[in-house]
Length: 278
Length: 293
Image (cartoon, helix red, strand yellow):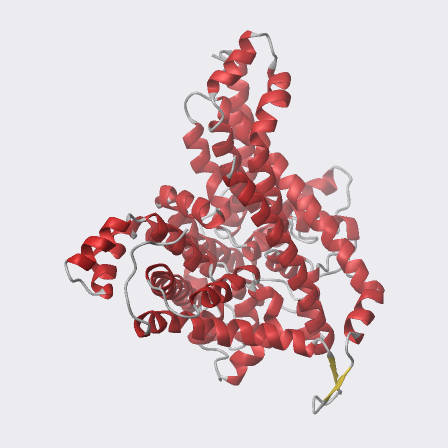
């Protein structure tokens, strides 16, 4: 065995624990700040142990917030993240099915057109995309938040790869039994893809929830802000003092849903991460 | 690879493709085309008509000291983020890999900063290092160090690098740990029996066998630092002080939306497009090679 025993063993644990603590520290500090009063923060150093204002600060953030109630921003984020995850999974399943299981003219062309989109994050084409969305009158709307972000092919590519590994005998059998293509899709392909769909859902949910630049551009109305972009809007312009407890409570609320998703669905998450990077 | 068994018909597959093709055309190809088109024009100040300038926007950009500075900033920034986040992650992964039991527990403990949005990470770090109320700033002050990332360019860069690397450590740790655990223990034990000490084993066995993972992470992290760190920059420094943290993506935003210089912003988009293209090609080349291993 090459693993160390005795002292070396404890040093390994010590190193890891120090690493974990350092990684944890920013979140701990945000949590502490969300449970104390404003004067405790603005007269440094702030305490490093939680205070007793947890309920007050979180209620104040959720109910009134600063520009808009944070509860409202949470709903916006949820709609956006679910819309992106579900929308992308549906359109990708359909198009991957078409590309893998049919032969039709222009099939390769479609495949390459979709494949090309793998390369361009929304950050690169923001100005023209913004103009398109504004032209449709989709500023400050959920569809404006969702559609531009599902226009990429990562999921299509992934489902294509998976469908290619599905044994040919299944489609053969379905055809011999006289099943129509959509019947095969619903009864055989979809149940087989369950794990892949779930793994992808976890990744896409986090991706959608954590979007920043796009919501920043198209939601000028505070009641349409998503929580991740709304935090920055809570800082006053100029020299006014920021309302730190409320802002930090909002930050904690903003990171909670994706963290819960990652921890409770750790195995699906890791699988999705590995799949989507292959 | 192709399917041998397929279904017949043209209309059904075309209908199935329609949603994706429609969304991609409207929200992807049209805007991307517009970016290329706009990059060849300079709009007049009232936005009524624009004048064709060919590659003038590109020519101007490449001679613009601010744009060149932004390129250099991006290179420094993404280099630092990649090295810092991969270095820390590799160190932690090596430690976790030495454990017989408990690696899984540490994985759970280290994995979740990945879920924190870059913009939120930016707010957390900005809070710690805030010039007025920041805890770390205060303790640094006790030690006699006057931290001020609002004025000091180097400190501003350091802070955005730290905030951007923080969540990335989780991601890199995950892949490094998986890579390390995939190395057959027998090889390492054989070397140990032959008397190779830890560093020798690491240098001659572990590092070479880990290189596919390392190279993959290198590309992925550079892409991350280029495109996904906008939130960090925007929340902490807004590109300042004196453009010291204006990375390319931030400049597209500030020129296009704040400065309303559409031609230049579009040309910058096209340049970024080329950069992503190159990075993607590198990534695919590498993945192809990994498949043939």
